[in-house]
Figure 1: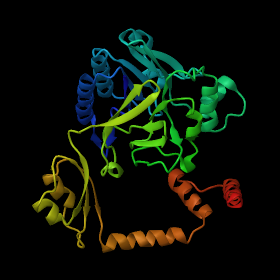
Figure 2: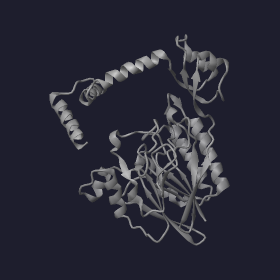
Figure 3: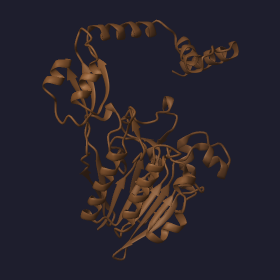
Figure 4: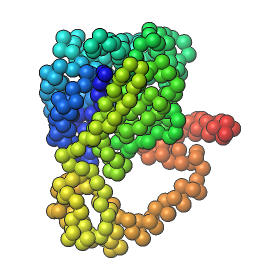
Length: 374
């Protein structure tokens, strides 16, 4: 049996609500190293978004360097691709040099999915790596009409030699949709209208596709899956659990199992009056907390009172009659306006300038076309 550990979206250097997550990331990366020591996978797939920013901080680079150095000591092949948050050139720095340590960093797109053959006890698995791509990246290599993400990925794979009789694994970083609705997290970068989605059908030649990009563990198709982030990065992820995914290959049979990841601090939502939350603390007070206060009368310095009990509180909001009334008023304002009016207000808010007549006419025509298509 050949074992591959599927990871993605480390987002090293991530800052959530002005709190630097580096210490939590160091903890979870050490936990992942312990899992690798125990499980002894033959390969590790890191499917993009290694860093949270294209120009990571010195501390983030140091943490990644320490992690990769320790990975190289564990006698397992490592395959890393860049995601939309990464700078391909920075992530790929010294990639040819570290291949001697069985670390394969395919960060810069070269027109195809790169093929690596992993041999274990005379049994081979082909591992293909495809960094995050946009239609323009693919068009630069092949020209023609490549205007959407599905066509872009399809074109790349059509120009990649794939032995359909072998076991083929792909690591990729895209927004892939298949059966069902994708679960999105607030910590992701979401494109309006899902214009960046890739149809899962383009991956039919692969036995398993290890995806990065979405932050929640889920499947896009039978053989296409996201492992999610190793840590929670938004309040929308509070009710979920994080895991690494072990892919087990026995001939052409492939199975997966989730290995739970337990953070140094959990991320939770707590709800109640200020007195309830401070007099009777809920759970581990060192966790990252999103507090929802139900007091009808706004207390004096509620954030200060909460922080004295929950030092890592991330945000505070109210859920009472006043907040619900304000929400109803805002909804009524939106409901009574046309899509064109709402777009014009949004544009002015973002740019501090009104739409020109030409721009307004263009927006009207676009919305009119959309209504006709419906």
